[in-house]
Length: 148
Image (cartoon, rainbow, N blue to C red; front, side, top):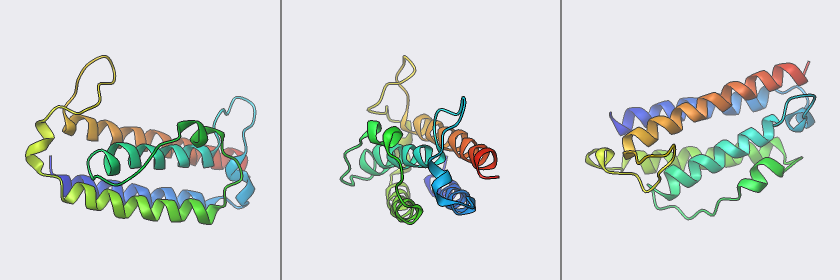
């Protein structure tokens, strides 16, 4: 695995996240929940921002960040502009974190132990990328369902 290539994937899909948020015709629809839709597009965007800031930019890049998962899923009404600005910050910090990460560290054990077992940093980064895209797809569906 090449951390520079992984950064390119995260950059591409962070840009896709921005495009999805901009595609909502009505900004307030970012925060709608309806029926069995448990999370709004805005909350999922905040969750993705918090996830990358914690596990990549803080843990691997050394950027200061204190995560508030409760706020990620509880916030409502944050402006689209504020979300887009946060994504711009994440893009910058993810890039600095990944391109400066020593590729030899990818085989080191991560400080996190999810899924009932330890994992390498490389494995965890791949997991984070998959997690990001899972929720990015949910945001796309959310937008198409609530923003007709």
